[in-house]
Length: 287
Image 1 (tube, one colour):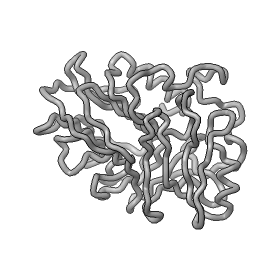
Image 2 (image 1 turned 90 degrees about the vertical axis):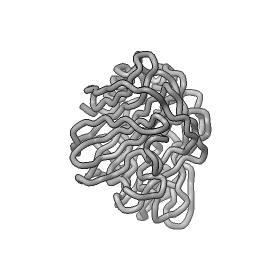
Image 3 (image 1 turned 135 degrees about the vertical axis):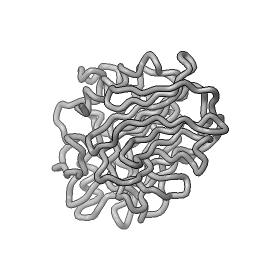
């Protein structure tokens, strides 16, 4: 379950979203890596991005919530906007520079960021809470699958159920999906006519997932908290589709979990997988 934070600028004092926990002048996470297609996070992860973190509905109006001066979500602005009401996220802004924001127009299907007078946390960091009933988000633009691509997602599930973390469309051969099912985390990597399935044992821990495909070693891979499983592949899909965050493309299999970060690379990150994990784990203390 999530816990709620007391309000304050950024909410975490001197904790900064930097590489290796260094000073504010250090490069941010995505300053180091190329080929980023989509980047959703509640910390600032790209120094070239100057926009807000999220757009929040308080039951009567919408407001963009910025990052505070420390690079974390401005919880003072969030609390002032929401007051005693829940804060629902209509738009999770893309920090990649591609403006491919995650969006949900229906107020009944928006994930929650604020409740009970406080910001929702997972551990000590901000999180979006998806209710497992009908909450999900969809990117405003499509992206095209590549032979080299990786997805990174930081989550914590609430219950044992069949949930869709990243929607794969209704045909898993055309996309790259991720769900919990039958006691497993299942990662699907479509090759155009069929799909590869990789898996790790399911749990309700705070989890860092990285999965994808690389032509440098001709493998599909799935990593859970630093542990990797992989298999060879013979082809890859070139489908154009949006990111479905928290459900399938038709809104089914809704996610019951907290989500803190989702990043999509359309590039080969084989040599960077461990460094990416280290950065996220150092910041969020996942495992």
